[in-house]
Amino acid sequence: MPLLEIRRVKKRFGGNLVLDGVDLRVEEAEIRSLIGPNGAGKTTLFNLISGIFSADAGEILFKGKRIDKLQQHEICRAGIARTFQNARPFLSMTVLQNVMSGRLFACDPTFHLKSAEAEALGVLEFVELAAKSHVLAESLTIGDIRRLEIARAIACKPRLILFDEVLAGLTAQETDTALRFVEKLRDERGIAVLLVEHNMRAVMKVSGQVSVLHTGRIICSGEPEVVAHDPAVIESYMGRDHHARR
Ligand SMILES: Nc1ncnc2c1ncn2[C@@H]1O[C@H](COP(=O)(O)OP(=O)(O)OP(=O)(O)O)[C@@H](O)[C@H]1O
Ligand SMILES: [Mg+2]
Image (cartoon, rainbow, N blue to C red; front, side, top):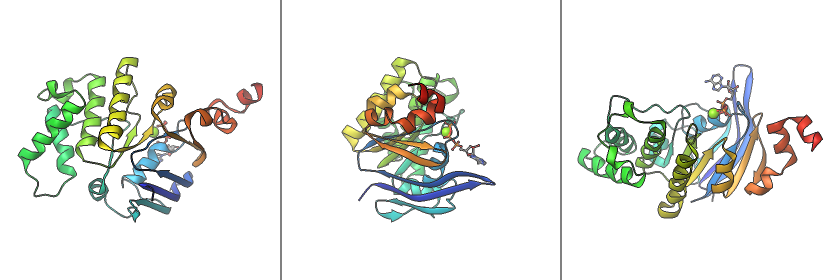
């Protein structure tokens, strides 16, 4: 049974059919990338999986159970965490408090604050940000904000994390560090990752499988090398003329 299964999902905004029957699977402890041109519907798909919007048609299953009618916090507690394309940490709170908020969102109301703090510190150590645990989020660099986003997601104790362009704006070195965390999540904690990313070098490096979303449909899925050489994928990124010239 796949960890996450998306079946024939459709989403329309007004007259704009953004997702037109998307099928996608993520297996346990897999790193799968979801790529596609701007406006393809990647973030919209994340918004459906995480319960921000509901689908107009289709089903979303997690560990074999339907989650497409659940609330955001229920989906988080079921084991799916996410980051946001436009990172929005609580700026006037410390790094530690931000991560604790993730931990508290993902657990039942009886969970103790002290335990949340201890666990949040552990997560900050994992992403090598513990030295800044008492710094206000507003004074972080973009690299540290991305780490904080990753930490907040991990603090939700997920089985699956949806990363939405978590590498955007990072230097090559920061990118490599973030990718190391992603691989560590899978290798040390058995967490599966669905990575929306435009950085193809990063996608090629960490993904077991890649799926390509184009005009609301998955047009290709497979190993990174295979997907990168698929004519339909090249055309969707570069345009028809580019492909004809090759
Ligand atoms: N809340 C919304 N209301 C109306 N239209 C929306 C909404 N969210 C997304 N859209 C539209 O849906 C389409 C897909 O947007 P989405 O943000 O999912 O694309 P994306 O693949 O994440 O693109 P990018 O790579 O630029 O982040 C776009 O045409 C966008 O304008
Ligand atoms: Mg997006």
